[in-house]
Image (cartoon, rainbow, N blue to C red; front, top):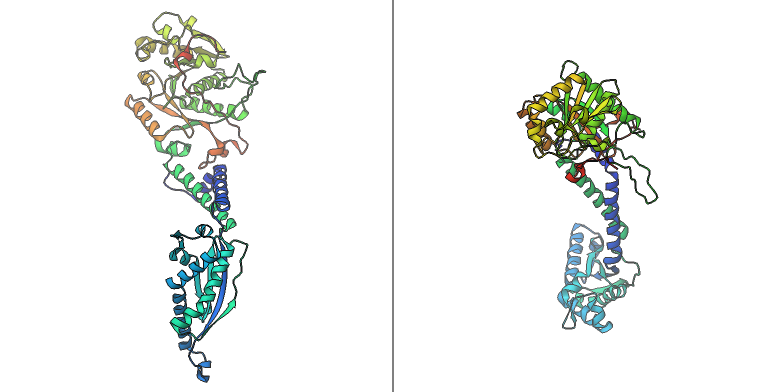
Length: 501
């Protein structure tokens, strides 16, 4: 969970999600436009103005407007408006409207009860103000019909003199403007509503992104990871989709989920990534005679098997003798990656049903031998904890410069932990934006319980387009290539013997 943001990190986060922001903003803007265009009924305004003359006799002194005159005019205008908004005036307007229009047409504009327009619905359509705090009154009607709006203004202008002279004692009422229908609606303001929708969409998209990132517990920053656990980051590998040729039916019979360094279409930067990991491993193990490494992960599907295979290949490319052991005897995959048979392997070798000569496949890649898992046994943990397996590792450590062991995920089974006394340490593979700090904490706790050593971390399947808070370009430049595995755990049936198609 992220607690703080710098402006730079915040901008990088938003830029990395720019398409999500664009889509949400566009949807809100389009939705606001469609709602205002087709779901909100347009309203039309008409207005009339009238001058209400006070009945008081003016004198020469009255010609000089002072503060008392202003207060008096304001008070009179307020009185006139109160009278014109009275229920008696509204009822009279309703009666005259029913004479001009069919009641069914009026029901579309006003609330109608017992074939009469309700006073409250007529009041809601009127607004009245005094112009510049004088005795000039502007009356505006706003309805769903331009004609009805104009007629309402003209009706109130017609009946106003009688009410004002009789109730207030005004001297006279003079109509200044006669209301006319206006074909252009005053609402909804479609451009304004659309802009508001865009702004709301933009705000919501930014809020969603920030909340998601704030509560996101997945690991994305290697610097933060290294600082938290005081362990080295042995390497970072970027995600990549490699297109493979398809047959006439659009299928790729030779496709596989993972890609090895021996493939011809591996980008240069991926090769360099594994060379960096290789160099770091060689440096880390430089002072120890035991060069047996277990490669594992917190959970399935984080790319540890392919990482183990490629690390073994990279070490073999230096001229070192390397053995890759598939100790994931529940769901093995190394024989699939190297297209090798899995009749004899680690399980048969431990129970002495095969020899090393039969079980170990020589030169799966030049300089790299492969010991596949063999048939899936019912008791993998017991086999790995046996003295026979310990003796085998000691023999392999004497025969090879490096022994790389592909083990099951730490948080799933304890197989990797039972061999903690036989190995130099564990290399943990993390999947970018997938492995969580909680799952890594559980894995580190399991490793610590058996007092095994963690050599370091490898961050796998880094996606540049979504990496917002840390610049990977400092390693590979702006045009860096990527590398991805996506090689999750398979079903037990997929671990059957035979060559992979």
